[in-house]
Image (cartoon, rainbow, N blue to C red; front, side, top):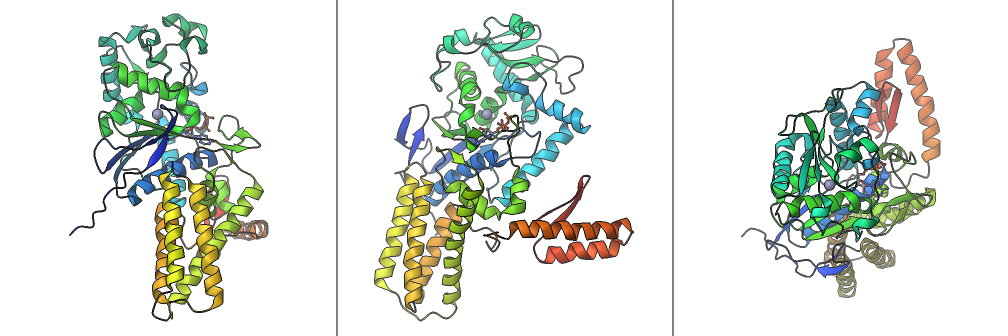
Amino acid sequence: MPDVKTPDLNIHLYDTMQRQKVRFEPSTPGHVGMYLCGPTVYSDAHLGHAKKEVAFDVIRRTFLHFGYKVRYVANITDVGHLQNDSDDGEDKMLARARLEQLEPMEVADKYFWSFFKDMDALNVLRPSINPRATGHIQEQIKLIEELIEKGHAYESNGSVYFDVRSWPEYGKLSGRKLDDQEEGTREAVREEKRDPRDFALWKNAEPEHIMRWDSPWGVGFPGWHIECSAMSLKYLGEGFDIHGGGLDLQFPHHEAEIAQAEAAGHHFARYWMHNNMLTIGGEKMSKSKGNFTTIQDILQRYDPMVVRFLLVSSHYRSVTEMNDEAFASAANGYRRLVDTLAEIERRLNDAPAGADAALDAKIAARVQEFEDAMRDDFNTPKAVAALYGLTTEMNTALNAGAVGRETLEQARNAYRTLGGDVLGLFAGNGQAATQDDAPVVDRLMEIVLKARQNYRLQKQYAEADELRDTLGAVGITVEDTKDGARWKR
Ligand SMILES: Nc1ncnc2c1ncn2[C@@H]1O[C@H](COP(=O)(O)OP(=O)(O)OP(=O)(O)O)[C@@H](O)[C@H]1O
Ligand SMILES: [Zn+2]
């Protein structure tokens, strides 16, 4: 018999569209189709991106835990996302390509791989499907044609705009009334539009715009929003289950996605989920504000599992404020869990046979507490509190003397399943969990890398390589970049 678990039917989630917690009912029993708006790949990912990716990864893992099959589609934006998120301005990819003197597709690939390297480190499961906007131009053109045919879009000067006045529901997700919406675009673009709030589905390419494709309206490129409507429907089908993204994408991006899909006659996402922001000094961390810390930089200082622990310690719909104290307390909290788990595993080597019924009941109650928290809109802080509770109880029992093998196994399974499989916290060995020594190691590494650089300058490459290999053996990788050597552990 295959190991088939009956899906749990008691999961509640907060649906942004309905503005309340509702019971999740899948469109196909036992299956969940999820779409997540992914990154625009023009620079390295920062901790704000990590918050979003980890939030939805935990949601996906929770559905898996509760017996669902999940198809998880997360896109990569590699065209059409213009600066200021508006209908004019330079394409973010092109601006970066110019800066780095690369082909736009080189920029996309460079940051695509860097994104996945970071996500792998944070133990974020890879998407089931990872479609790229430039690979789906035909699908986007087809959807635009449907919209023109139905009278919800019009061509103007080689560009195509969505006619917001033709779609009274525009604004239903964010609750914005059409009249309250800003008219952000510059004069020349505004002249092309019937209403300044119309948004671009397709843009006519100026001669110098090198990312360009043929279309029924001439040579151009897709608007930013259309890719997500086209690709989610393609891979998840009509009326798919969950659409996710950051709260800041509700308007205009998600509002536009809904209008594009529904005005063309499609059934779109049935639930909308949004993560809140990671902030620094109370302000959203963002690339354009420049107040960001890249994931690569933070991983120089902290074990990726500590970073992940920090992120799951606050709810996905709450703000996560990032500062040194938050990391220090995450490192300590995480250490408590892994130390106890390590002790349980050590004791299992020579534990006496048998079980401790009272402790078994406590473990079962903590498992229940954890699962109830996750069923209630993926309440990770409460779930973490259940793990802390378990940890206190286990430490008391372990300090008091021998614990029976069956009970130790139960406890280990609880940590591995809930902390490991659901929260994704036990990739790697967690050994570098508390890096109170980070400043000292930083300084030491500066000295070591300088020594290695001296070897290289004197063409003593064998010695330089040996130094790098020795560092590798203790878990420190050194990478040579054009800006000098970088390291991480
Ligand atoms: N600080 C943050 N906290 C949580 N999620 C974020 C944060 N910053 C970005 N995201 C999410 O990551 C996704 C991609 O965001 P995007 O590439 O626009 O990042 P950004 O730093 O806001 O860039 P920009 O400042 O150029 O708009 C979006 O879903 C967005 O909501
Ligand atoms: Zn999107």
